Length: 398
Image 1 (cartoon, helix red, strand yellow):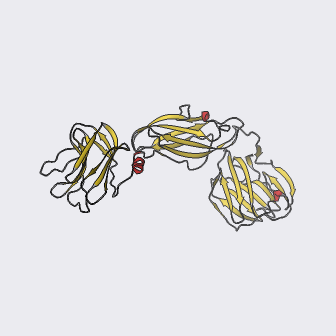
Image 2: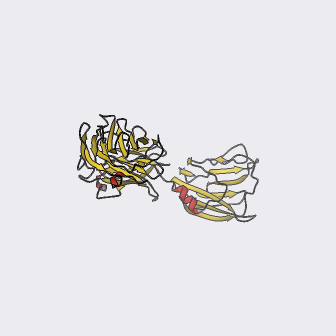
């Protein structure tokens, strides 16, 4: 239990249980000038001065034989005292209910009231060991997770929750200092990637994280957020970030009207034919999501829907579609890609199923037709348009 001890000079019961005549079965408190006291039936022992303020107190009673119990009192995860008491609880301790903060006493008047605050009181039907008590004392602060990858220009919000009011150190670090350095991570508008935060017990605290990219650097980094207190216990929450240059860089820009790249005639045996049973298509995309409803990323076919080949397109609802041999093999949910934002798209085929990944995360999709890999046929190929019709891409591709 956690105690906020507000007096160390008066006798105080913390927890106890008596029989129907109000004789103690077990009794724990502060007695003899604020010393930690445990009594089992008649025998008792007290030792160790208490101090005011919040403390984590654990009373452990372990039966060692038919007549004796080993009692250990822990204060803030350290042993305050350990003593053999010549008595056991036994299997029958029926009588009055457990009492917190007062001594039942035989007679009409109760006494020895605890002065302070009790919190997180727990009972266990076995003797906890020292490691378990250390774990209870050091209950970790909780950092919320970031559900999906973000891009470097986003403002990331997460929450920190602690069981008790605490002062903690919050640090965010980048996994790759060459792409995004720690100095470019800003916590709570402090200008630093490391801050002190003061929490209120059980109340989520909002934290914000912003990042400034390095010019002409791009890639994927992991942001490692950690929070630690005076006990040294650390909680972490990690999330990936897509880092893109602040501008088109070397990307190709398509106007949605007549821009495309003509790759010419591609045979089925050409690596670009993708006629094996497994394949991957990967690209960076910053779409407008306006213009033609169905806009080709790449297309190698002799007709619509990837006939005699394959095709990959996006639509203005933010969906990704992949075709082979005149049928749609994969069609994602709406909104998996966002307008005017750099994002990484990958289509993979493993011989049994096609999967679409956006920023490294597999997105929901339907499969209108069974798995089929591209035919080993010769067909024209284009980037940014369909091979036999317009379907022009409106956006940037890299």
